[in-house]
Image (cartoon, rainbow, N blue to C red; front, side, top):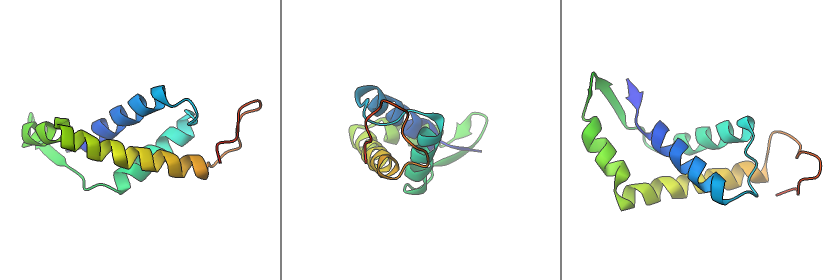
Length: 97
């Protein structure tokens, strides 16, 4: 069993993070943002080998509207994590709060 949104959310995070260096890219902030984003989306589970229904869900997630929804949720999660990081900023880096 696999939540197909996990890969889509991780890809969106990585894409946004590369273009937005103001967001912390440490493992803790990444995990927090991914978890928060996934908790604010309906899961898209697929089972089997190959997963039945996975093709339709992947098509939906690859559509322009599907990608936009995922990006919006991930961006909001990144902003929330940046506003309330669970660690102190590294020395010499600006505080994004």
